[in-house]
Image 1 (tube, rainbow, N blue to C red):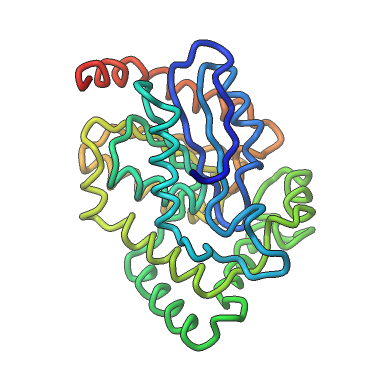
Image 2: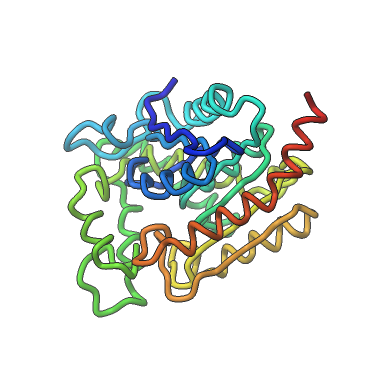
Length: 293
């Protein structure tokens, strides 16, 4: 089982939730969120994706390591097997982690799925990105990927900027904490983007979206000023696609917030919205588990 942080429910446990972090960061950044949910009856697990967090070699390019992204799906399954038992299973993913969460839900049984700041791109763009990353991996595998320059474009709406990462958050303290963290914001390898584009083009494909469980309840949340979601345009498109497939989808856009909505100056209302969604759907999930068992 992968190294992880476990926050057991501080009251009677009513659900188990696994957190999947985004790119260029690590699971410990979600400690405040995990502690909040554990106080509300959740068994919470936060972990580092392969090649992230303490596993990332110092001064090395960001990579998913020899295990690759596939190992993350196995790890999530192991966490649920160990900690969920008969409790409803909830999966929370942020940014790239939300794409991984979506992929997990397409392949495994799950009760609730929460997608935060999910990146959504046109099919043609994902295919082009995948092919370009594949070529870059063949020609210059040991150099930082040119795709890292994408982040420079994210700041366009926020000029004048104080840092290269202002697009992350409207909260300057969070931006500075990110910049000061040696386990965040590092350069990424071509192989990283190759795996990421491969994940996205599968998880967001129409035929794969149709594989989600019919009983799955979905919450999609994002900041209105988040460039990763194309300022909500891409995310709303995903919500519409899921609703067209007759899935139960709730969504919430937060005005004035950017990409890391859980790390904005006042995150508690967002924590509460997530908890409200979980609590509202627990009863049907408990009944479903009782019928299955």
